[in-house]
Image (cartoon, rainbow, N blue to C red; front, side, top):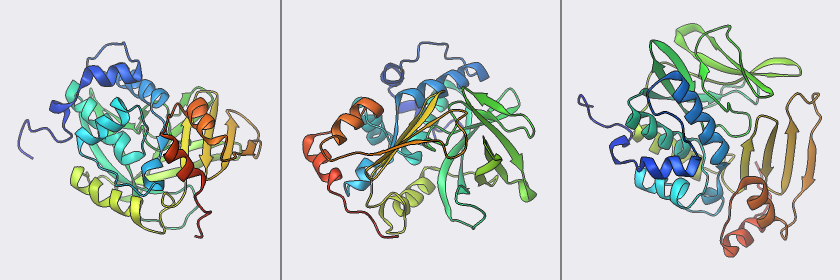
Length: 281
C-alpha cells in the first residue's frame, strides 16, 4: 500500500449513515474513549448473523455491499463484514488499525484453521483488540492488549495473554475460570485475505455457518444465541450450565428474529430458513 492510501475504504464510507445506524452521538477524535464508545454502539446495534450464508447467497465484502447490508438495510453480519465495516470507520476517523486472522479455541486445544478476523488498534502507543464480529462470546468493548489487565464489560470479563512467537490470545472468564476464545499472530491481513477466508467460511461444507441459521447478540446482562431452531439465553454471572433454552417453531421465527435480534426479513426468506434441515457434521 502507498502512503496515505485507504486500505479499508474509509474515504468512501457514509459516516453519517453509520452513526445513525448505531445511534452514536459522541466525539469523533481518534482517542481510546472514542474507540470504546464506537465499539459499544456498534455491538449494541448490529447483530451477528449468517442469514445470507444459510440462504445460499454470496457474502460480498466490498465496502459498498457491506454498508448497504449492515447500514442501509439494517441487517447484521459475521466477522468479515462487521470488522471490515468497523475498520473503515476507524480508518476514516484517523485511527491506526490493522486486521489479523485468528484460530478459534472455543472447542478446546485442537488446532483449527484461521477462520476469524479481528482488528488491532493503536492509540497513543497502547494496543487494543477491537472485535465487533465474534458473536455472543465476543467483547462488547475493545480489550487492551496488555497481559494481566482484565476488562469488565457489564457482567462479562475478558483479558489477553501472549504466547511464544508473539501470538496473542483473547480469553474470557467463566464459572470454571479463564478460557481461550481465539489466538492470533502478529502478521497483518488485508481485504484480499478476508475474501479468501470468507469464501471458505461461507461455502465449505465443514464450516459451521453453512446449512444452518446462526444469529447472536450480547448485552451487558445476557447473551442470546439462535442456532438452527434453538434459542439460548445466558445471563451474566449465571452458574455454569445455567441457561434458558427453547425451541423456536417455524411460525415463531420471524417474531424472534425481529424481537430478540432486531432483524426483519422478507417472508420468503424466513420461510426458507425455517425449513433448513439439521446439518450432518
